[in-house]
Length: 237
Image 1 (tube, rainbow, N blue to C red):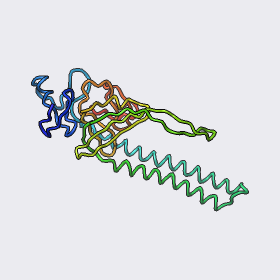
Image 2 (cartoon, helix red, strand yellow):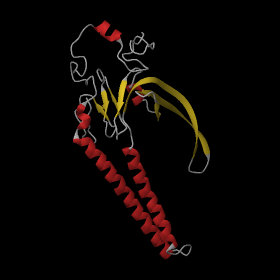
Image 3 (cartoon, rainbow, N blue to C red):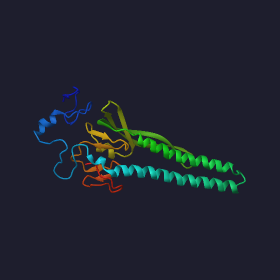
Image 4 (cartoon, one colour):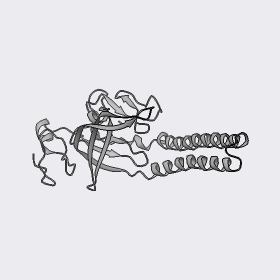
């Protein structure tokens, strides 16, 4: 099948061009004319065709705020524990006195808070993009790990990778070890959108899917559910 927009050749079973993401004409030719094919709801409760407007629901902004708040609360608790522990150690140990022990505790506590700050900044800088799945890879790999006795051993694992090409031509690989859920969820030719500030992916055509990922916390949900059972954010369908 030759793409009418960019001229690239794609497999006949693919709904969208793997190079530019344009819909392939053979879909319309084989299925016949059908009104309102974009953003229509198929029979049953199996999702929508089109990117959901639910991403603008205030629940997502609230989730981002709560995630940031909990990051700093958790980091703050760890920082206090470390600072107090080092202070007590300095008061009771013959190996290290205060204020040296206290300074070390302050340094480690500050490191926890810095990590929380950098994580927050990283989430805020996540950019949104539209793209298409151009490849999927399943690789058997080996890595070295160290056990509790300090001995090295080899661990075998499977690396599942989904390759995306954005609308600006950038190639993005998303990989995970020993979990093929996302790998099986996407097919080559699927159009996807990464949402700004979240970093999660929404599939354009969810027709026929039995599962759907929450675009806030990435929890796996049933396609018939309306909200995520973990964070209560609306599911994008």
